[in-house]
Length: 252
Ligand code: PGA
Image (tube, rainbow, N blue to C red; front, top):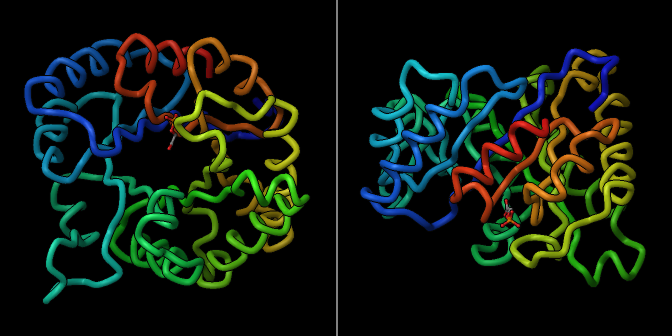
């Protein structure tokens, strides 16, 4: 963690399409109980049908909750979509935008991701914007060009709002695979992203939290999170196990 800046660590859980009312009740209560006194901010991004449950369980606690995606549109004939205003209606402060699963399975382009980040901000939500390269791209030496392209698309639409976003670097090959980037690999990409941010606006850019995601577990969290420039984590599988999620949060 970079001690020279004021960035408070953020540990975000991405439940993906997992959960049930019964399982969530236990998980949310335990996260709430274990969250006080942590040095990191905590947020859980839950499936949309469980937002009311998360709101009821976490209101008044140190834990925030959020969505995993939002519609580009405000309202209307968009069957199946959830708007940013709806997320706000359920007390969300955060929303994941441009997760690699949205990019690869739902055809979200850099331009769509950028528009969703802008829409999130317009609705009063903090977008957690995901960027990251595939294994093929890494092996072709394309990591920095790919994440630069993804981030630049978002920066181009933010205007004065750069300081209001969170970025998560998630190498696609590390998501859900058990393969983690080494702390040094992650740090190198983080330094590159930071340079891009600061190049746009040095004050706002140095305040943006840069998370790492991809198979973060209790046994590797400490080494990743202590790296200069890694300001927290976006946690998938391990966010569904309360003891793992809290252990990761304690490493931050
Ligand atoms: P993982 O997922 O921790 O299960 O690798 C991370 C993510 O997809 O955000």
